Amino acid sequence: MSDHDKSNLGRGIAAEMDHKLEQGAWDDRQKLALACRMLAHEGHSETLAGQITLRAADGTFLTTAMAVGFDEITRSSVIRIDDQMHVIEGNGMANPAIRFHLWIYRRRPDVNCIVHTHPPYVNALSMVGVPLEVAHMDATPLFNDCAFLKEWPGLPIADNEGEIISAALGNKRTILLANHGFLAATSSIEESAYLSVLIERAARSQILARSMGQIVPIDPALAKESHDFLLLPSIVKASFALFGRRVIRREPEVLF
Image (cartoon, rainbow, N blue to C red; front, side, top):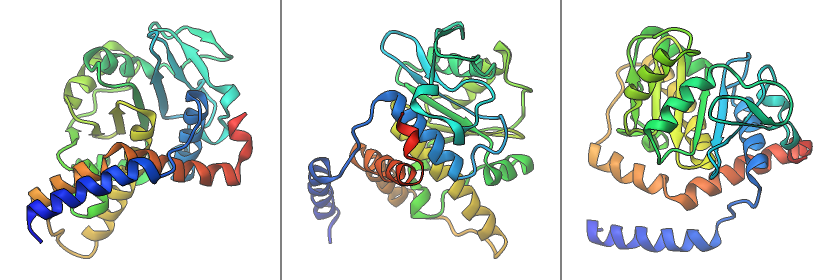
């Protein structure tokens, strides 16, 4: 099959997916709660570390309250904060680490949702200072889209850490943070949650593969092709909807 034929097929598949894949019909608070629960089931919320923020059109942000675990979040427990991290809707306080999210939002007008967590396999890579290697189809949405901060700037509760992390992220969607964790910064909560699931699974696969031998790289052109296809909005939203349905079957209270 020629590249031209494959390109035409890809466009046709993408158009069909736009109309036929279930993409969910939840409001922003429900999506944030679902993202928290799905990431909790993936091992992203074992301590108080980690935050999700979602930028609203009015410049405020939806997020979770400090000391409420991802596995506890429901729609009604989501809080709204202003750009000074003051709570303007809901109960509790914002996580102080959200300060570095605000630096990213200021630098990146294209970013509307940030997920930051400390999952175990990403943590392991960060502890030995090893960047993410994209060598499997499932990891290709991260191809040339995962920055690497080589040195930990310290607890991210002040402006210095926000400036360093936002600069290191640059224009990429994700970043592996040495001695820390990772974050995903994209235009939607669906995409940030999707990439958060994928980066931890990619880190796990990388560690398992390294235990067996050398990782075999994949062709950059094919990786780029797969990256672009697997980040189509229809695939991203359908993936989020799949994860969301799994959460709702287990924990229907998440929507209320």
